[in-house]
Image 1 (tube, rainbow, N blue to C red):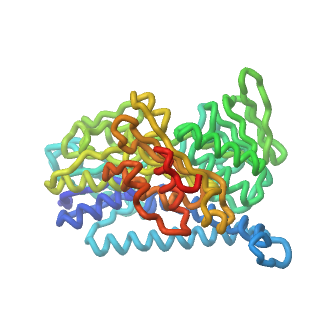
Image 2 (image 1 turned 30 degrees about the horizontal axis):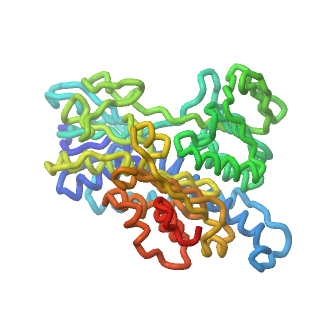
Image 3 (image 1 turned 120 degrees about the horizontal axis):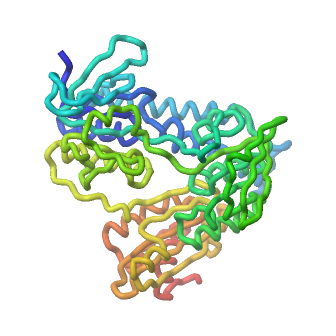
Length: 475
């Protein structure tokens, strides 16, 4: 007889395992079906491994600058990339083991295999029974959920006709498997992932060229942030070509090099490097999971859900990268918590995506929350803004990282905080204060009146908030 559960989660990535833990905490019986390793893309092919390598690149750059801080380093600093990979793998393994321990603590059953959703049958009058094909080849099994949460995540996209062989032309997944650094690389796509890789590889000593289709890099961020990152990357000699329409059919691989053409402002240009990384977004994993056996609606490649993350079949939920919301690990986590709480019979509030902080781990870092100045104006707000540069902050000078600024925008009529954008040292750690301020409906004056300890980088946020009304102290 097939085993029954209150909740079955299809996919053990960040959103899936958090949903499972939350449901178990509420006393529900829970199972997770995962065909790969617990932790999913974020832990194994995204957030954690890429940030581990970014940290290694940051340390390398710090060592190269040691003399500026009065520290003598004998000989030339060099990168042991295999050692950096080994450290990355150790971190991933440690965190993976931690999730397994949380599953044991919550008495969550893990099925290691590929799950397929079945339609109504003698086992269940509604769609949702999961057929599991185990990784170890043992006999297939079926489990019956009262509620199903689909958390199947996403995978890297490519351009039509541009094959990712993960040898010369990489996806972001494949690039993490590189065992040696190339001398040069073309990065197709100047969004979040592309620019993180550009920053990391440059800091490791790779010659980097970025080809971006839009008219600016990180086009989803505030225009002033994009302009500042462009300035700083050009200063580092990272080559960035915007308004570049890459021609996939022109790809040529030969003699340890990759060449491709792009139409740049009407002119065809050719670009050559040792390797290529394609970073043009991610596609939801909605195929081959049995959705055709249900009434679940898929539009433009994403599962459609309501504010409680229910699909058209009310007992089937979907969260994370497979639905048309922000593809961020912390978003998937909170979507999973909301879905699990609703299944447990609790009242839930709709997730306000304007309150989600967003981080880009380039050097310098970028972080934002709320809406940009451009979006605010598009929505009809009359905007007032304040900006403060890190060069006016003592702790930034002590760190030797004084590039960048913090920008605060508010509604001129109501004084409500609308958004905060940061570029500079450790801003991904500072953005949480801005996120809390937005949740609490703080005004720039209240942020400015909050005492920020000296000397800290966070003083820049207080100064930027005061600058909204021209009251900054050090500017």
